[in-house]
Length: 237
Image (tube, rainbow, N blue to C red; front, side):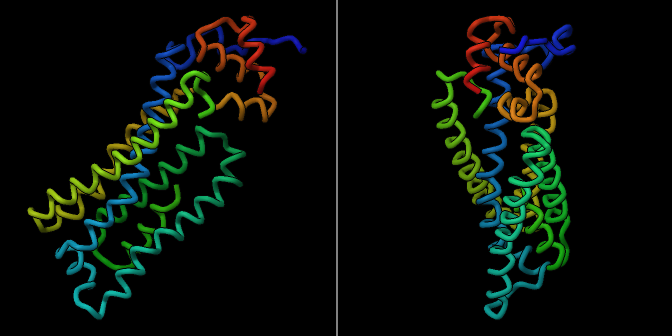
């Protein structure tokens, strides 16, 4: 096996000094936020399309506008398709962190466009843009964290429905603009955590950045890069 040389980053404290369980905790926060945002985004438009103010502002009132309204709702899937294509092409070259940050930034643009929308083309563009958007855990935690991510996805979906329900009694612009704008809470959380978190060690290995991958593994396990367990993980990858 080739000699393992630590990267220059090993002389400082990478990932804000977090290692072991705490580093896994912050990775889980980022993943849970991302999944919550995904669930939230799936349900947010359900409360928007029944808002009288939204329908009036975008000239979607009345039975003759039903087809147009359904098209505006369904066109989100066009963005999802584009996002999926970007994920397996551009995303693999960028890396996991950069792909998440790019997707979140695109999502922020779509959210802003929809929140400030006063025309039908604007909301359609925002819907399309909004549609575009487990390797770092220890083995004993992976199953639990996958379940947690699914739970946070459902929690995000449930949250937006409660927000929509509560604001339905309020009416007016806030009844549909606020639920859309609330997505920025998730977006800002991702912007604040993902940049300093570790890259996927599997992705690093696949792109011939072995020293960095081993550094990530050692920080996640809170062990020396020369520890036999770290070497074993390296060999498995």
